[in-house]
Length: 248
Image (cartoon, rainbow, N blue to C red; front, side):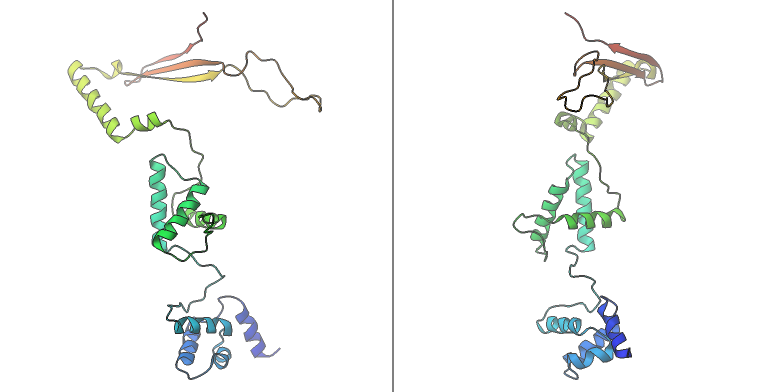
């Protein structure tokens, strides 16, 4: 096999040509010193790639001479990705994290707002799942974002537990301590939790064609017993005590 054929095979691999040779070849063609066909082999650059660069320059478009792997390019720059990450964190701190569908819709709106060239679905007005997975893998290496399962938080708790309300609580606490001289052993906190008295069953052996399989238990679903825990600021605590449902 000749050296020319070996060079052509090497150039078939995307991004294997030399950046300096590409710039020199483009200059030769732009200055009308050589044609693209004559320049490709001596400078060992792909002829189609060279023609793409020259056509873009003639149209007045800024074209990078660096090798680009694949047909798809990044829609957002590194600065835009950082802004997007900070916005995601801010929404999560406000108890409004984005799921995948909301994230892809937001990405499309951001690209449209910034007037960035993209290949997102304009009919669905949403980015694709490939963008979601590639963005997550890229961001995971450079930030503390991760996929999490959210916990349901009521609106009243979100409204009541925030920085102004917590500051107001401690201001009232400080006023009461100064007025009545409470010690740490006289300040108690109590919390409760519901414990189900209906145990969960493991899988059992039963007839295959039977529509429903039952097993005896102490009660039906929805039976809970309240357990209270109390502890003082000084470290004292009382044993947990149960509050059973009242019978009328």
